[in-house]
Every structure is written in structure tokens, then in C-alpha cells.
Figure 1 (spheres, rainbow over the protein chains, first blue to last red):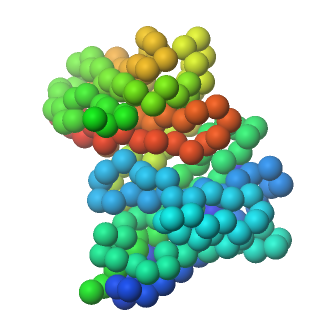
Figure 2 (tube, rainbow over the protein chains, first blue to last red; figure 1 turned 180 degrees about the vertical axis):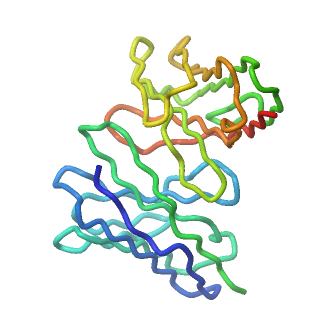
Length: 110
Length: 112
């Protein structure tokens, strides 16, 4: 299975944009990049996903490089409630499942 | 009301006991999943089901079994619980061929 690499932790000041990177150099052409987050020990929450085009929704933006080897999740105006572990994940239609890594622990600082 | 519910939310049991964790959903989704999460780690897939008659093993299915009693219900059983099955267990659902999964609140299991 293709693997993702994320920094284990990041800090961001409240009100600033939080940019969370993810490397996925072995991604294949039919694998989507998904982002989820987990606040404390709650169930993970879907944020956004994309294949090759940049995507935006009410929660975040997803920027995928042209070669698809990396992506960045952007939370435009971080709040304290955005403190969570953020997972960058592949969905492989052949394996029909999501594979979670260990994620990035994002701390929003007042 | 929550769309994906799990019962119990917390459970303490002893080594060798059989235990069942239950998951119900009102989202009308056809696909359901069971994951476990150990401290400081990501989620690992135990079993998944794409419809009532479909059951598939995930990456860590040993020591577990599942039952898909209806489209809305997916149960996870530990036939003979052991301490290294102490973990946080999550159920999730998704619809069709989109892998946007919706997670339940989790069941915290302690095996003594």
C-alpha cells in the first residue's frame, strides 16, 4: 500500500492559516487523498478529499501538487477548536479501504 | 440523535470473556467498518462490510469476528478477550463508492 508521511506535530497561532503538509510520493493514479481529523478521543471527522485538482469546502482547502506526490491542507483561520490530530489518508479503490497513519497533532495557540 | 451510535461506550472485562460491541446507524449507508485505535497511533481496520451478505477481513482481524445483522447494524465480537485488545474501538459507515466515512463516538474497552 502507498504510504503517507506527515510531521508528528505543529503549532499555529489562533486566527492564522494552518498549513498541514503530507508527502505521498508512491501514490498511484486512482488513489484519492483524504483528510480527516480527530479531536481528543472522538471519532474521526471527514474534512476534505481530492484526486488531482485543488478542492475547497466550508472547512478547508486542499492543494495537491501537479505530480501528486504531496498535498497541503489549509485551515484558513484557525481557532482553538481546530486543535486535533489530522490524518492524511489514501483511498484505494482496489483495496476498498482507508489506511490511517499516525497523523499530525496540530495545536492552536491563543 | 447521532447518526452512528456505539454501545457500550465503555466496558471493562476480564481475560477469556466473550464480549460484543454493537454499532447502529440511521444514515442508510450500505458500508460499515470496525477500527481499533491504540494510544498514540492511528486507526487500524479490523473488518468491513459492503452489504448485509458481505464481510471482509481488515489488517488486524485475528481474535475478532463480526456480524452484519441488518443494513443498519454491525457487531464486533471478541470471542476470548485478551489484554492486548484493550483499545478504543470505532465503527464507521459510508455510502456506495465514496469513501467519506462517518464515525461513531467510540467504545473504550479495557481487558484485565
